[in-house]
Amino acid sequence: MTDTVARPAGHLVPADAFAAVRARWLPLVALLALVVLGVAAALAGDAPPELFLVLLYVPLLAWTGWAAWRHGIRLRTFFRRPRIGRYWVVVAGMTVALFVFSLGASSITSALLPGYTDQAQVDADAGVPILALSLVILPPVIEELVFRGMLLERWAVKWRLGVAVVVQAVAFGILHVDPVGAGVFGVVMALMYVRCRSLWVPMAMHAANNGTVLLAVLLAGDAAADTTAPDAVTAIVTGLVALAVSGPFVALFVWRNWPTAQSLTPYEVAEFGDTALPPRHLGAVTVVAGPYGIAGQRGRLWLQQTGITVMAGRISRASLTSAPYPAVAGLEVAPDLAWIRLVAHDGAVLQLRFGTRTRRARQGAVAALQERLAAGATG
Image (cartoon, rainbow, N blue to C red; front, side, top):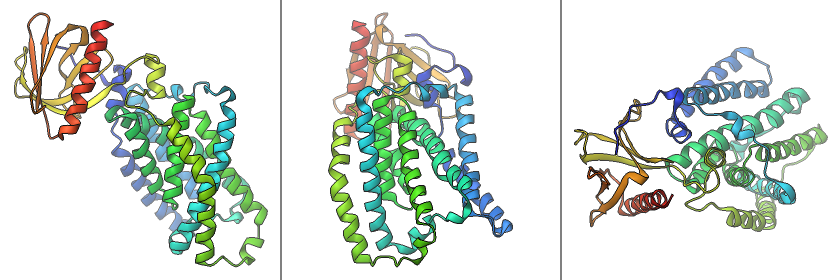
């Protein structure tokens, strides 16, 4: 085991790149943008609200660009050629199924919360260019880049890919007036990204979904204003029928494409190959004993591609100590899984105590470590 020197943020290896991203700053950026745009909308008077929706995406794109530059993330990796082939049939079918599912979920939501969903009405008077930009171009590009790109990759490193799929979908749903439909949409888009290994596919599906909505609004025109809205019972029944028709297809797709605990993200596949073990964050640890005089220091334990690393903290990310997998001769685990002890071939010992983690979480951490040690020993 060898001590290491902290690397500059701009030269982090890919496994560290998303580990260093701080997603907590994104909601603050979005909130500040909403406040600024709200003031601008009040001062602008009769300007179409869709115009300010366009401007809302500017800070999201700025955060993405800053995070990528700050942590050495190659955004072009998100836009590799899709691995699709004849899978386009499934992509087309799921685009239709998701649209029907979203209609059903939206119908039920509007019946239960009519005042809440009114804010999502599209005003055809805003003009086709602004509507196309605010519905068909910017949301598919920026939302997929942020949620299915940056956030999914970040949370997959922090937890694992399956958890990241759920968390990013929940966040995506909360930010839409149809949280159920948008949440399920976010799950399917994430799985499409993982399956096809490119954001082009979810972007195209997202654009097709929003484009269909825009086309319906433009074709309806003034006739929509003269049409009496269905009563709540009719809207709920219609929504349930739509969910019953599309739900089985959506559920089957999710079941067949759900990632395992060892699934890699598309970014990790591009960097490490199909057979690599995914980097994992195992949480806070305290160094009980170590060969470098750092006993008692607290850090965060990472399983990276080449070895184990204990980093000093969220901000400095200085490496306290590290151990290449082939250098570890043995692993000892406490009966209650509270601590682990790594013994190197040269006799050096590194003992780490887990922070506040459940027993199940500690079991998963030990299993992940054992798996990587075995792979390192045989590799």
